[in-house]
Length: 284
Ligand code: NDP
Image (cartoon, rainbow, N blue to C red; front, side, top):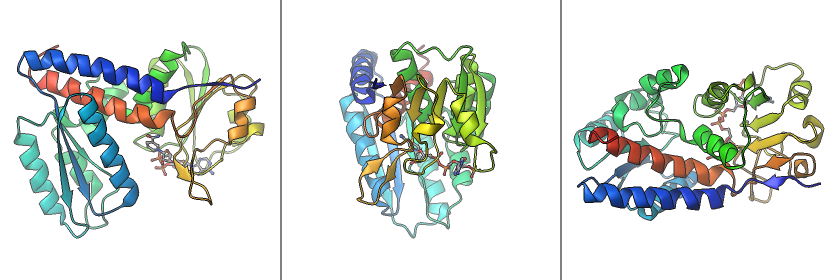
């Protein structure tokens, strides 16, 4: 039996339509959500991500600005731009596309963004709020996964949820959101012993490793829900996930790559941007 494909593309389209309707309503109150995206350097993958974010902004009826700095830009130049955007009332949300060139500290850049405009939810104060479960913004990728689980009526409560990967942007917040929904959560990483055994005990398995086809069929319990966050390129240059495609035959539900978590990530960025616009204008 093959798993049900969790269609992130279709859910994204549905949520973006809802956001567009909400934007139209906000516009009647004189509020236009605005997103500023900053790209430093000419990383090809980053250029694609930025283009997709611009397209999503236009689908949601947002105002958007793109700021491109050369790969040689200094940290001071970038911080100056962020300061200007922090003060710009047309801008509700600021996103600085990572990774940044070596001469610029990502931590300093994240810290410089006004927490009320931090639509990536990377700022320390937003991370702290997520930890205690009282947040304005959720980090986009884990939030997208939670929306997908909800759409397919998968309740993490009481389930063993295994997250493979502990990055600040995916693994750790993912574990926290599953915990908030009463999952029993195990976080695995490169130093985890008995990874296969732990994965085999997962009712919900989230792979955020960054290695093509890392999770193989022998690591998955029959009937498990498998969420593939990975975005890798295989030897032929094709986009593939962290989960081997044959896991489809063992799982009950699984996200495809592409078309699963990826589109949801950008949609959750749109959700955060409209939330930011509302917060900044005192609209609940
Ligand atoms: P990171 O490289 O920051 O983190 C990878 C994690 O995987 C680390 O915690 C690492 O452990 C763990 N890991 C590496 N090797 C192993 C191993 N052999 N066994 C167990 N754990 C291991 O990656 P990100 O979290 O940023 O991204 C993960 C993947 O998700 C990537 O493919 C990325 O492209 C993708 N991604 C997709 C998004 C989307 O929208 N779909 C958004 C963001 C990311 P340790 O900490 O010990 O090093």
